[in-house]
Length: 345
Image 1 (tube, rainbow, N blue to C red):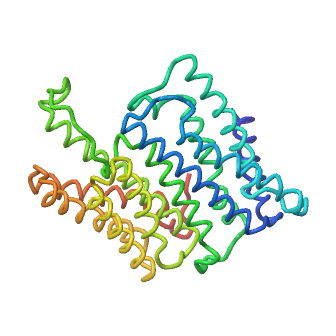
Image 2: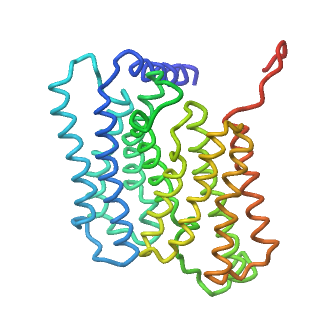
Image 3: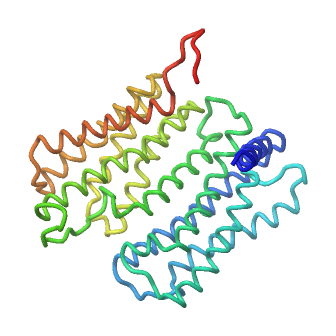
């Protein structure tokens, strides 16, 4: 275990030092976001086709968009590598190369998997081993600009012109994570079975529990990204609004935007996070404020536009739980300072 741990630590340090020493072209980070957006668009189109029961084969237009984005990115970086100086390296370091290998291998494996076991349907498509490997490889690719900017000691305060590859990278990452957690998405028009559950008294209680879980999971993903950014940067105004709005609207698009008003409520949370960030509010209140600003409008719209059959105790309590979740995340992101002279084990 000691040898494995030492190897992992050494790999992380080496990947970080790559960014500090090599200074890749800014255009590499920008290109990674562009090709990542191409691939994520194909992913969401493929998700939309599954929801609408389009013909289930490996060779679909949606897979074409996804994999053509990957191939175009590989080709671009291969050509760019010829013109770039050798010491400039690859944006994101070694983990980006690992992501390329994992994604390519998973793409080939996905074809074999479908040939042997058939096409997955419903939630099984999100838990397919090859699809999870595609997610892992894709995550390593789209997070490359963030890793690069973090390691290169970029300035804490940046303009949009300087920061947009980092912001775009995190938006794509959040969208990717929420896509694979879509069975617990508060922005989707999921149909709950009306038959009684084995574990709960009735289907209504099952739906309530599912909605509460979806709110808490989405809070972890969104506020986790916000606190991650604030730990390292003071992002330009609008960063958090985009971070909340784009993935939420994309998730709603899987169901032809039937719940678009609910997804748009995420904009309020992003705006509040931006305002609190500009006011240099600490992470505790930033997390609590952004969570409350996201889910209070959400439940008000849900209640009055979609006839949510919840009592006020239930939805206010869910908002409170989301705020507590954000508070807990802030404690993990920035723990309380240890007093001078105190010892930590």
